[in-house]
Length: 396
Image (cartoon, rainbow, N blue to C red; front, side, top):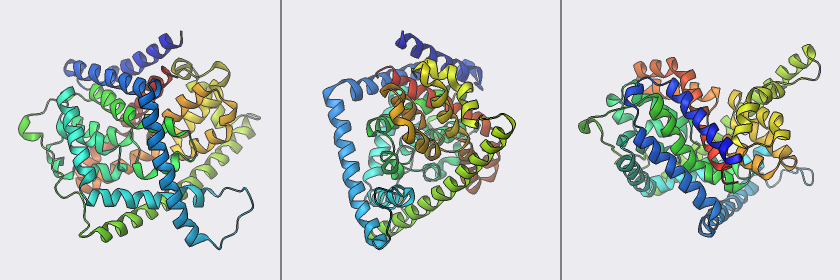
């Protein structure tokens, strides 16, 4: 029964995307089918096979070891700061680790390790699915870098991007997560769900976006240039740039958390004053309960889980992850898995401004186009999150 409900959720997500399509006649259904199959195989392999589980455990161990290294750096700088025993300071224990992960990414980019991996995985996806190289490259690139960085990496190809191609590029950026903050995520959520969400989201973003905005690109306009992806002139400059970028990200996330959590409390105070005891999370829970049920969330957990998913859409994934972390013991394993995968993406209102602002800095005309289809972008990215979470739920 659960599998049938999950398949229905996938069909509904695809149907909504098709209803929103700019050009239904030219949807690449073959590519969509191939990517759906790739999602099924990826999830089955990672969740249901000993080799897949071993790979997840290995990657998780690597991230945990990196977190230990990062914690040493944080402890050196903040070693004199005393905190109550067993207390957890989110900024120190989670956000500052981003600095170390950002440094590693910057060094791997300078050494041309990541560009090589990204280019040829993107090339393979393009060959298999028939999607253009730029869009395929950007989807893979978005698994490693943040929304702004992923878009900036293809700025030399912007002159070739019409509105449909621009939508796909933006959707991949919004539907992904940055590798620099994965370390922060797996300190709050089970690592296996965060790690499986990364490839699932890449395919989901391409599936939904290629239905909403089908493309047909001439070969001469379909080239990817990754020769100069790093601004650093030396290994140590790359380390310094990565550390500074990580520090900025940590401060930005901390500022957004303060603003969003405080605003959420204000909204809840207003709502509870009008409707005694009601919160925004409960309202969102009722709104998302039907699709949550189809995704595989247990009936008794629908309202609370739906509220957490809704919180992510209107604020950001960190706010929602903090909420999920605090109630994880009350949920079944399947609900934790489904909701964790749903939360592991940048699909929220604030991302519209981030992506539009980044594109505006590259090309003002295309930036205006992104602003115009901003809500369509958010709906598409949310459908991608539903697709990824449902796919994971089929194997939990």
